[in-house]
Length: 114
Image 1 (cartoon, rainbow, N blue to C red):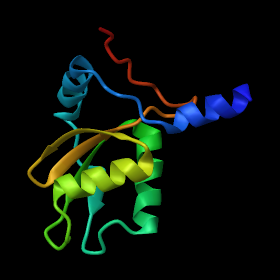
Image 2 (tube, rainbow, N blue to C red):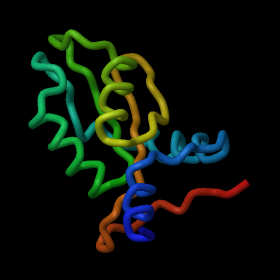
Image 3 (tube, helix red, strand yellow):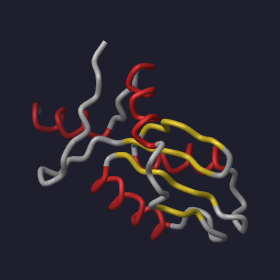
Image 4 (cartoon, helix red, strand yellow):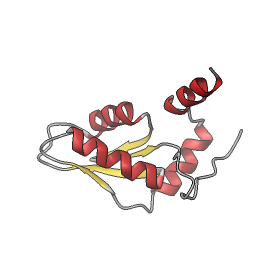
């Protein structure tokens, strides 16, 4: 029972505080987009690629290309829901997602506490 509860809690995205969002926005400022939403929008393979990327980096900047039928806010919301991630920011055609990685070989981002 306890193992199931622990596994289930890892799937639920954590609610970020305003200070944590501010910290993550500052960190994302210097990032280049690692994931692009193209004309095919969010296919299963695209979501799998985004999952691998966010698992490796925890904080990723994404860009929506001109041929896509989605806006950045729509793509961010849909992708965040599928990845169990938090939308940190959405400006223009770019958005930033955060999800704590389950991998041990990744340097985890230390979030501020209130």
